[in-house]
Image (cartoon, helix red, strand yellow):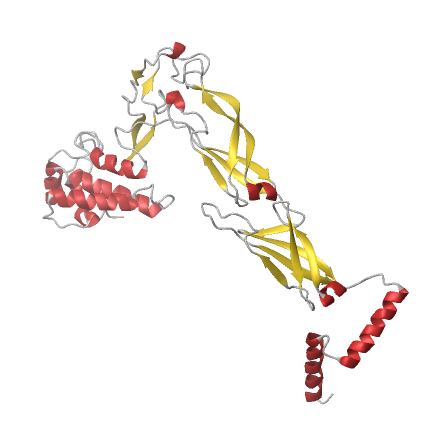
Length: 384
C-alpha cells in the first residue's frame, strides 16, 4: 500500500509553520494514542503514521528532502541527503525528537510527569460489620479487626536500619521513580525496578521490614456508627488503611454497614412499619391495641369501628433519625383483619345468626354488596 502524503497525514498545508506542525501533531497523537484506543488496530496504525510524518516534517533538512523527492528521499540508499536507512540520527526518539510532547501526553494518560515521584501511599482497605435495627436506630460503636500493614517500629517507618532517614537518589531513574524505553514508535514508561517507584534507595535497609517501612499485623479499631444509618452505608476512617511505604501517607479504611432483618419491624428510609393482625370482632367493633416501638417502648393505637385490612395508622416522629438532619421519620401500623378459624359449635351458631341478621339488614359489608351488585348487572347485560 502506497504511503500517504505526510502533509495530508497531519492535515496541514505545505506552507505550514513549525507551530502549525506541532499543534497538528499534538491533536492527532492524543486522538490516536493507544491508551485511548486499546485494542483498536486502525488507531494504532494511524498513531504510527502520524509519528512518522511529524518526525520528518519537524526537521528542516528532512522536510526539504521530502518536499523535493517525496518518500523516495527516505528509501534505503535514496535521496542525496543521506536520509536512507540509518540516516535519522537515532530514530524518531533520538536527539531533537518529540520527547517533550510525549512528556505532556504521559502526564495526561499515565498520571505523572517527568519529575513526579510515586508517593507510595498505602492501599485503602474494606471491612464489614452487621448491626441490629435497634442499634441502627440509636447509634452504636463496633469493634473491627483488620489485618493490615502498619508502620515498622524497628525503623520508625523509614525503611533504614536503626531508623536512619539517610537515602540516596536512585541511580537508575535519577529520582523520578519511572524509567522509559523505546519500542518501535512507542515510548513506554514503567515503574523503576531498582527503587520500586520511590525515587530513592536505602544503603542499609531495615532487616525487619526489608526497607519497606511497614510490617503485617492485625489491628483492632473502634467504629462509631451514627443513629439513622442505613443498610449498605459506607463509613470512611481516614488514615486507618494500609501504612504507606517508607513513611508515606496511609490509606483509608472503609467500613460497610449491614443491618440484620427484624422479626417485627420493616424499614423504608427513615420510616418504620409494623404489621398488626386484628381479630374480626376487634376490627368490626373498634377499640385500641398496644404496639411496640423500635426504641423498646410502647404506643397505644385507637382502632375505629369498621377497620379494614390494609388500613394503616401513623405515629409521627416514631421513626428513624435522618442522617445529618434534625428530622425524624414516622412509624406506620399496618392492620390485617384475621378470619377466625377452628370455630366451636357455639361460635359457629353465633356467626350464622350474625350472617342471617346481616343479610336481612344489609349495608354491613358495603364493598362486598357493591361488588356482587355489579356482577349481577354484568350477567344481566349478557342475558344470563
